[in-house]
Structures are given as C-alpha cells and as structure tokens.
Amino acid sequence: IKEHSQIRKIRAHGLSPRKKLLLVGPPGTGKTLTASVLAGELGLPLFVVRLDSLMTKYMGETAGKLRLIFDSIQQTRGVYLFDEFDSIGSQRGMGNDVGEIRRVLNSFLQMVEQDDSDSLLIAATNHPELLDRALFRRFDDVIEYHLPDQKEIIATLKSKLATFKTGRIAWTKVAQTAEGLSYGDLTRACEDAIKDVLIHNRQKVMQSDLTRALNERKHLHQRQE
Image 1: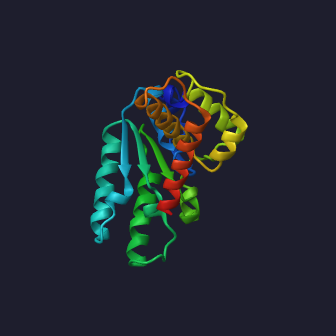
Image 2: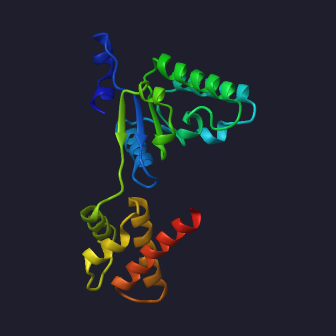
Image 3: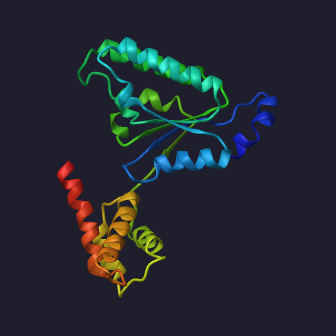
C-alpha cells in the first residue's frame, strides 16, 4: 500500500512498486477480501476477472480475451483480481490440447511480465499444487492463507456474535466442532444461528444453535466433495 501510494516517487528513481501478487489458500480464507481492502485503501476500482469463464474450447479466443483485459489494465489504473487462477495455470498435460494450453499460458506469462502499468495485479487460487512452477517466478510476492486454528476460530465466532446476546457457550468445545472450516464458513454459520433465533422469536444464541449451524456448514462441504 505504501509503495503504491508513493508510486511517482518510486518511479522517479527508476524503481517499480511491487504490483504482482499471488494469493494461495483454501476458499473463504480472505483472498478476495484482501484484494477488496487493497483497492479501498488505495482508492482504486476493483475489477474481478474470472479466468475460468474466459477459457473456451478455442484457445485463440481465450488469448484474445486476455489481451483485451491487459489492454484495460494499461488504460485504467485499478486492482485487477484474476480469480480461479488455476484454470489457466494448471500443470500442462491434464487433458485438452497441451500445445494450445502452453501457448495460452505463455501468452499470459508474457503479458504479466511485460505489464508496466500502475495497476495492481492479483492472482488467487485455491489449488496451488496445480500451478506450473514457472508461474510463481512471475510474481513479486506469494502470500499463503490458511484455515483458522482454535484460537482464531474462537476469536472469529465471538467477533461475529458480539452484537447479539448469547447464552453460556463452551467456546473450546464449539471450536473443536468448527475445525476445518474457513473464516467465511464461520461468518455464515454465525449469521445462520442469529437468523434462526430471530425467526423463532428467541432472545439469545445458545451453544446448540451455533453447533447446529457449524455442522450444517460441514455437511454442505461434504456433499460438494
């Protein structure tokens, strides 16, 4: 943030600010939120690019769409979040025409490397193990996000329930139930518990309400696997 807020001073000395970030980690751990906060702090618009929606069976079309996006990056300063980055960065050889995928991937890497705009480029992926290692070298920083541990779970739950009355809650036990869930899951579970209490005209969120909402989030993930 400091580098981009002083971008003219940095460029005047022949230097460039860090502007290409790769965010890796499970869904719901704050990658998109990070991009949003950076845009807000810098006073820049946030543009979210869903790379999976750009991919077509005609790789020439995909490369053309990427070119248009990088033209916009040059013309309009902003924070550009390339979401679902692994859809283009997957290890070569996982099906489709390997040669065509390599050409599109190389085009993307060249565009990233050649970009000299004042925009901030952020790529986010839930599956870093699928990415070609060559991609990592094109970014100024790689930031890893992790699922919350027990202390972080408790702190998040308490924060999200702070504006509503709660009954006696054994936080450590609840945190054990919530293990494996993301920050996003914890937030939605708290919201679900509060809404359920309101719908049934009750005054407090009880431990049973919170545990039920957390288990529902876990079951949802299990059905999606």
